[in-house]
Length: 497
Figure (spheres, one colour):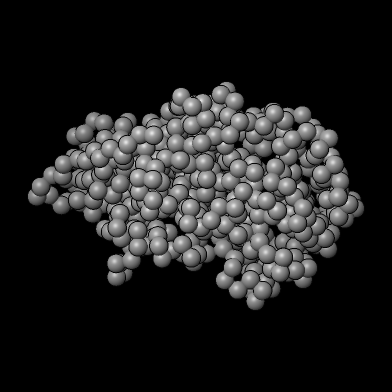
């Protein structure tokens, strides 16, 4: 493993003006400055948010070609009190990666950090912070390798691995960040740490695995990959025109069987949409016969009336393509889909005494079907926990990711009818109403044991839970002046504002 290497830039003395800062960046060809005042068309292209409802507040973006250029930009941003954020894939739901909420800020675009390298052990892969999930999956597949990650090819590895990274294989292998064995990172003082491991700095490594954008800019991740599965089975159970009562019974079967009986090599997701649509998708890593035997008891628990689709013999890469919502896995030279939406997250506790009740589920599904909206909406429910889940097997002192005892992760999501602006005002109330319809009947049972996945716009307690105090203390150590800043950023413990 590489040794941590300090590489720092030398600050300019006697200047503290934003115009001077931009002038410096413009004079350094390796930073590739694009400012809103000099080239608005290119600036808008580079800072266009995945969520078109939101816009950048930054005034400049740089597209550096090496870590030294990032180090220089961060060093001078710190001197001039310019807030910095990094853009990997640009898929932050709240558009923080493109500078939303950072007035007069600087965005550091990592698109040039797109290398993927296989180390001599044929199991460790070094993935640049600007690589996208689809491209990483294709390259690893050529080497016979795989890691757990999400299904959208255009999502950047940088933010995905920084905060968690869930995929169908996560119950078997853990989150994307659980594959990290080292990182290359530029710190708030401009120091470049190459190949930082847990052994070299246990506190910093812990913080970077779950809250990385608060502590530095990750130019590369060193992942310990798995051998890709020999066979993947996809099974789907679909209901159409389902009543709230039928949805409730299907969900309760999904929840109970998921917690008690689902093996780690099964990923399970339910998706609810308009018109009474309720679909459960299972991805099984094993043979078709084994999957059929496994799923038979689950099918017996489901209410009648579902149709079944089964793909018994898929390769790993074929399964990712099938789950990609018709997007190509290779993103090179392509532009990803953009949306205009509002979303909320809710993560439920993995305890048999805190399962969502019949009354709460019925209230939730009744709300979904009976409430008028002008949006295109869906609710996705991912099985995180359950028997043998690798996600929940990781102790909290191994990484700063807070949700190691969650059963289900709800994503409540509503787009405008055109998937572009303007966003309808009723969309905010509709999604908030979804959230309240499920949470309010469960608050007394859950207490403080529910949470939310980072990326949505929730409170620090829901995102970081018991990890926040330690993260805040470490933020004061590694970035006391809040160089890396965005609305959800962890505040240093010494901060008075």
